[in-house]
Length: 343
Image 1 (cartoon, helix red, strand yellow):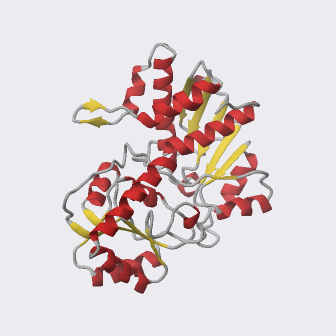
Image 2 (cartoon, rainbow, N blue to C red):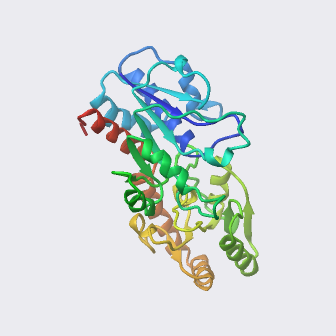
């Protein structure tokens, strides 16, 4: 039996980040492993399957990974516990591995009513936000480097951090980009669109302010707002173009989420994005604001080309960039750490 624990805060509001997605995916794998091994199924695991029209939906991705990887390496299955990172850990037993997916705890000091505990070992760490540097108070890298140095297996969401962490003494960091949970961002096919362009997110950087100001001045049929999960997916599906802009060199989660809904994505060029996607095939990239406007106008008037790219982007994301892929990488490295892996 593979026993795992994940650690993140969940009492300060709804979490829609990597910690939640990893934990929920593993919980669904535990359910499918229980079914496959004819163990007594924990009914509480059903809450990790979304409700659609009052019925729980299945998850073919977590079911497939359970069969393809988990049970091939651990025939007895899986137990996964979500641990809030404070207090006494004894009620959670003795997990074989401890997974700490970056939940931004360094930014919550003074807000959390406790000091987050030190993650037990052996520790698996997935760092994000290594690209954010707003001066001494806002530089997120030093904290994440300190966490990585403690961990036994290290993943980083931003590729530039791989070589940087190596240079700073982390032996073998692995690039593990963000991803999408298709159950949260389903594909929504619309015969007609409501909006020409949409941006779903926060205006929290100067480059976003500049880009959105320009788009607002050029395109009147523009949706802007904050939505999550299925509500965001609906806006994406209602839009001819989903606009995205990253903060520095970060392939953000919106990149994957928009494409997973079958929507056409226009996003800024950054050094690492073409390691994952092909410009003009899976999405469309721009380097300047003038190019952003020109490409938006072009694809608004070329429906067939736009929708062909949207479909190719959808297929690429569903094949290679869901949490099946990311959790699969994590489990593969855990089984390697154990001494063997069967794939």
